Image 1 (cartoon, rainbow over the protein chains, first blue to last red):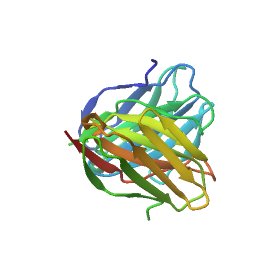
Image 2: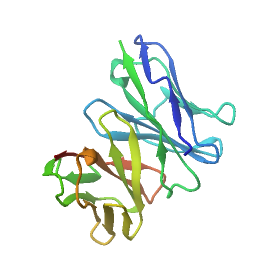
Image 3: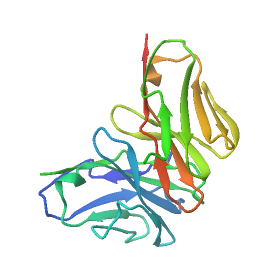
Length: 114
Length: 109
């Protein structure tokens, strides 16, 4: 069964550095999502992406964050000037058609900011 | 504010028991998702509902749009069902998603 893959599984970065989290969605999916889960807290929606542009974003997704689909297969989340509170598990997901389709999640990238 | 509330937060059951997890939401929605998160952190989508009831194996999910409430039932529970079950809703005013805090289920052999 096709899977959403995320790399790396664990990223350790110094505070203030930029980090790029990578995701390869399922190939025929058109809607892409990033979520984060701070340790011990609930999952939070960051952003949804369709047709090469952001379709919705949460209050969390400020100017520090950006997303890109650079090559038709990868879907990346860039976090600039990382802060300690950016430490979390970041999940990528994709769905086939409109948002009202089941989403397929990647295994997540654990981001640790030191 | 919590757009999605789940109960109970924690649940321990004996193998074979019938389990119900509840979800209430306060926003208008176009869909509700039930997700399963395993101890390793991975998330699996169990159901997506916009009305009525869905069944998959031993799992049943129902939704009452008027009451803004959904339930996830597990029949004949098994230790491998031990996980965190998360309710999430998609707002009908955009493509925003709101998540509950999850219900941690432990099924004891």
